[in-house]
Each structure stands twice: as structure tokens, then as C-alpha cells.
Amino acid sequence: MIREYKPEDLNSVMTIWLQGNLQAHDFIDPEFFKQNYDLVKMLIPMSTLYVQDLGGIKGFIGLTENYISGLFVDQNYRHQGVGEALVNKAKQRHNELLVHVYKKNTAAIDFYLAQNFDIVSESINEETNEPELLMRCIVEHNVKIGKCAL
Image (tube, rainbow, N blue to C red; front, side, top):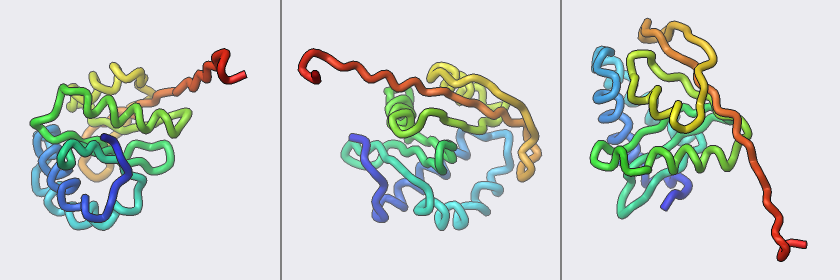
């Protein structure tokens, strides 16, 4: 079940955040994420967060307006539709979604391409000095009205 974040979810979300970053970004010094842990923990409640709760938090998506500030799935629940479901939740709320993805994180790039995102531009992340891609998805909200709705 996807639901809105609750304050009691914070520790689970942060565990998934740290593990996910360390696994997906092995080209970045692990100390970078460990040093930013407390800052992210403070900022998490300021974003709009949705969690996939399947007898515990299995993943989450953080949004700042229409920008995906984070999408992380517990390693034991990857490739099972959790990430896709979380992106679809964000698509329900916005007509356009944006996300930055490190160029070396090819699994994330492939994931977002499969979710109908396109690569818009490339830049260098100022904090890590790593190349990253800006990806965008234009969401079409098609409302179908059946006979019962007339």
C-alpha cells in the first residue's frame, strides 16, 4: 500500500536512503552520504513523501513540487514493481516530473527511461563533481467518461 509519510517512518526511510545510496553510487566516496545523513534526516519531513508499506517500509519517493528528490527501494524488494508504483503515485499528482540521475548510475537511467522519462540535459553535480543527467517525464492525464458518468 502506498501512503503518505508519517513521522514514525523516518528511521526506516533513512535506513533505505543510506543503503540505497551506498549501493547505487559506489563511484562516490561513502563518507559523502554518511556526512549528509543528518542533513537529509532533517530535510526529509519538509518534502512530500510517499512510502510503500508492505508490512513495513519497502521504498519511498520524495517530491519537492514536481522534482523527484529521492526514490529508494529496499534492496530485497527491487525489481518487483515498488519503484514503478511510487513513480506512478507521483505521476497522479503532477503533469511533469523532473529528476537528476548520476550518469554512472545506468540502472536508474534505464529505470526512468522505462517510466517514459527523457534525458533533457547533462551537467556536473557541484557536491560530488560527478556528471548527472536531468530527466523529464510529461504526464498525460486522460480522463475517460463512461455512460455512467453522464
